[in-house]
Image (cartoon, rainbow, N blue to C red; front, side):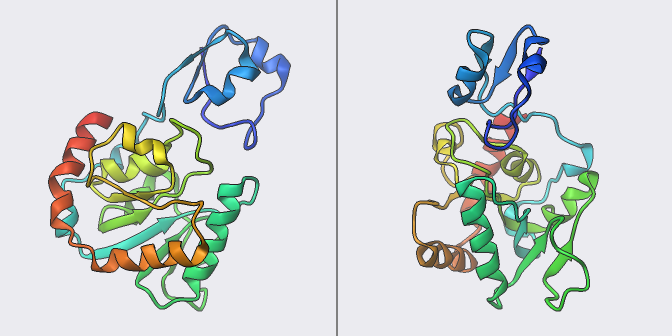
Length: 212
């Protein structure tokens, strides 16, 4: 049994590798042309979580407002838009902490925290009310650990994948439309700093139940 977590534009296995697997689980229908009839759809299959990610602190009880864990890859339109947004955010003075392999500690910007070990991702989420959890693409059902790790840590994810509306309750996430202009997206991110957090406390617990 194989689990195909990424779309072909990000990772495309060789045909001989595909033939070695009897059945695949895929997060959305966009992969079926690669697999013929050897697949079953299982949306949001990124269900393995590291134990340190757990958190019992409500979003309204956290001491920091916003983080982002991100790479600066450019393989997909969503990745290129994400990079453009991050570059624009670095030019602001907004209280956002930046984590990721493309950020080096000691950069002039004190908000840049640098890369994180996989088992220490909770450091970028546990104490933050919100986190920008931008996916690599907008395929239906493609919600990865970027979104789910936020839910597990009671950190409100800010996602760019509209399929989230099908699966999770309102007020357990925020949505940014990547088809919008950069100016509009930047304005929406700035608005996060004035959003009341308390209404998110109960819905995010409901979402965590759904994930688990």
